[in-house]
Image (tube, rainbow over all chains, first blue to last red; front, top):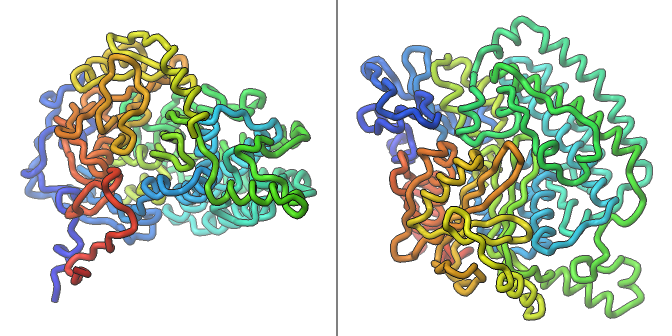
Length: 435
Length: 174
């Protein structure tokens, strides 16, 4: 008989008994994140006799993968909460240093597996910033289109899992069903449902297929009635409201102090969206609203994501009208492989193709940080190049990783039964958290 | 390779190092970068925060073991490690990056936790993967690797592909 507790222990990474925890940490878990609050000012003394430390996850159906939470409970009330992460750590940033710039998107696309195109996009944009090249107009618009469709797919997945976590099983089935429609379009364009490796440095891998307009417009017609259905199924439901309103509240100041972005920050009424405030791609030419909440609770975060799908549909319709003709990738011989037809007739083109895919292209020495608005918040990529064909350092600023820090603050004082609702409303993707 | 290096080197040479809060700055691909050493780290970041860069969007590190002669502006002594802090001013959506030089013999920096509580997990990650200690951090433990892991994987002298996966209590290959 082996001691399971000892075998699975993570030592100091776990939540420790009160007597072993420093004042600063306890103050932090009491919400003392705001600047100017001295740790001595916060009353951290709770009688420790009646509390209980319990473990939730990493294998738990509502922890969205392998998130492990340790909760200190006083009866049914959560006092402290600590996420223990790293169960999905696969060293992708280290791996990225060993792959060429052209192989890079294949690697980063597996981080946030619910919105892979955004990862490819931010990596490609960072490489392009280092190369100081501008991708052609059509490529920019294709990227904008794919990135908005990705937001829809990701938020539909959120609606599905959020519904499931709160017991609305039919919502799970509807959400997955509708997301599959978006993924079917991705499969048509990129060849894969997920982990596409479609957006690459210099443009995109292939042009949009014939008839893409009809597919996208069909999607835009299909989704709005479904979203209205969700409104009926969930938004107006008294049970749904009871379970989400006033649960997991965070203020703007707390969210900003904790570097939280995306729907968590917007749910507090702070209209921060990089698409609007620091436009990339062609968002500056598109008309859309930034959806904000007002209470910073679980319901606001749900409503924001639901309405962001509607905004994305609006954006996608505009893109369909405005998609320009032209090249879908940069015609720079240093970065782009030659067209397929040229390889059959020219030996030089074959060599060129071979060189680009084996050695890769060299990127001038330097470093750059590029950030985009992923469905979960600010997705950043910090790239350092030493002048060779492989990045010297790849760092992805994963929004889920940073947003997870808000969990202890959202949970504090709530019921343990609401813990699942709160985790779900943060929408962490563990592949991105652990990288 | 050499003909690609030339424009970058020229770019850094021509540029006059404008001082930001007493620290030399440069432009990297149009992005503002402030270079500090350990002594000026806290003071420059606090000053930048007071300037309106009140949101810390990212904190990471780079191990420059294999590229010690990278271009840095005059007045900056390159060290093995660099901690890179990305700050954001939400009022005008401007970004500034602080590159702090951290020496190999004493990889230590003061923590930013007290001014940016959101750096808590990021500093733990840098400690875990680079072994850089953040003085004053409330809970400096490993975050991604197991607690009993040896070494810091993102260091350049940490090899890839040769270490067997560590299973607790399983007999090792050696």
